[in-house]
Amino acid sequence: MEIHINEKLRALRKQKNVTQEELAQHLGITPQSVGKWERGEGFPDITLLPKIAFYFDVTIDALLCVDQVKIEETIAAYRQQSTICKQNGENEKNLKIWEQAYKEFPNDCRVMEELMFAVNRDAVYPCPKEKADRIIALGEAILQKSTDTRQRENAIMQLAYTYNGIDTEKALHYADMAGNFNVTREDLRSSILDGEEGVKACQTYLMSLIHTAAMTASGMTSKVQFSPKEVIEAYQFAIDILFRLYSDGNLGFYHYDVSYYYYKIAAQYAALSDREHTLKALTESCRHAIKDSTLHDMTYTAPMVNRMQYHKSNTSKNYTGNSCNLRLKALEDRQFDFIREEDAFNQIIADLEKYAELI
Image (cartoon, rainbow, N blue to C red; front, side, top):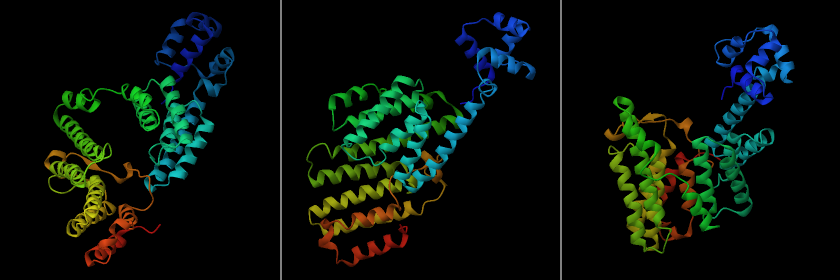
């Protein structure tokens, strides 16, 4: 956010409750000159800067917004460090970065927003009290201070998620503050834009809709006690709709999701002691984990998403290692002991170990 001298001058004048004419008279110039400065059509002569700064009892640096520039540069540096941490899954280090930034800029909503997300990076449900208290305090402060739509949306989302499992009434209060599903930014942009921009907006919206539908279907299984077959159906539905969108099998970023969904299906088949289908689902989970772990920047190729791109630099994770590490850890669970001696199971382990990162 760049603050120009015209904005600073106007703010100082209003703060001191003086007119353009009064300032002009003090400086020995015409009111029209002050008007041009405040409209950004010109700048004060350098010889006038000390006199203007003295009149408003500020430093020349403050008048020229040098302090604000330094703030912007410092926050940008924190963000750069944070991006690296989030890409590497270094949650504790990322939290320390934003704790330090918050000490320096406790009233900056951007810093509060980043700290709010950093505190909740582990996404444990329900949120532990100490973390919950911090997230709630930061989220409510953002809602009080910020007029930025995205910041407010993120605060509302975090408050709803944090209160979930702690105070349902308050969770629903914040949930009801969010926008209606029928009126979303993505929906409106896809309706308004034409040409290539319109196609990209539609594809962005489609990706969001399908991903949301897949997560909703899988999330439904945690609401009540479903049978293993019902859980399998929910996760298979999530997989099917993702493959319908990414019809050529080039799922890009969503190989991670499909790997997880197949793992959950395998766990249900394991509960049924179904060796064949457990191994089949685990094999698919492994295959997609490897694809995710070896993924590079790319353009999606299926017809409905062929304007969309994947850039690894734009992603983050809340774990160290890669998808293969996650699956290897999950396969240590005793529920898979009944197939642990199977050749197919050991081949899955070997394949995952080949692509797992050393951590």
